[in-house]
Length: 152
Image (cartoon, rainbow, N blue to C red; front, side, top):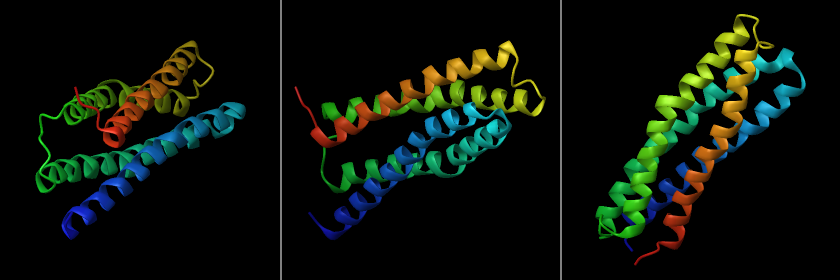
């Protein structure tokens, strides 16, 4: 493999570490804040900051470098592992934009309004506690595709 491929691969792996590493902390932030509701707003806003400013841009770098690696590495875009990864990536983006981000914004809105003890907040928190790990599982399947490169 050429130098360009190795540099792109390094950036791709680094972006994966940053994106997934950031995502993994969301559960820690949530659990810690759940033990002391006075920290709930700070934790949720911290998660939002990490998601908007660290994880999501890293996912953008992942997509860009991944597509360039397909071209530079002479991989077939129709390879099973690439197709599955791209479909799952698109699913994560759609689910994140359509559901996770609004869910998080609504949790922050309720906390800021002093309604962290409301049934609506409890409903959203429970939904987030299920939805976040679900997205994480999809991301792990993408990682499996990248590492093991299964084919038919």
